[in-house]
Amino acid sequence: MNGKKNIFLTGAPSSGKTTVIKKIIEKLDHPANGFYTEEERVDGKRVGFLMKTLDGRKGYLAHQGIKSDFHIRRYGVSIDNIEGIAVPSIAPVKNHIIILDEIGKMECFSMAFKQAATNALDAPNIVIGTITFGGDAFILEIKKREDMEINEVTEDNRDLLPDLILRQIERFVPTRTERARSGG
Image (cartoon, rainbow, N blue to C red):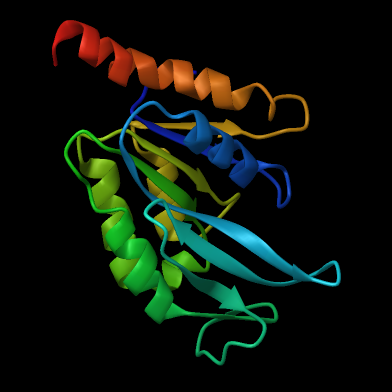
């Protein structure tokens, strides 16, 4: 952990990136906005990916039943949902932490998403997110940013990462309890 304001996780599929994000959200003592993704399974088989915002909106990022010009393997990608759900959810809000799960191949089919992700990273807000292994030119440029910290999620560290990241956030912004004590 190196103290940069954009704290991202990467790792192999099913390594636990989103699980770490959800544990951070659960324990977060700061106002936050943004979204995370979850797999949807039917009879044990993955059929799609749902986006869920912190304010309760949800929709498919991709699903095997979606007809789209954009596909990753058997999943049609919903540009409308990316732009109608994910993009507005990551707009910087004063004093909010932004949750951005994830900067990945599916999301990056949308130019509006790429711009919104860049705006979030450029804002003074802390951004907690995930980013795919590898990636296209846009994703590789994001990874090179000076204000990015990228931690690989592994079986050995995935249970430790939520608390490590929460402690790092505390160095940037006081908790609600600390703000109340100081009258702020």
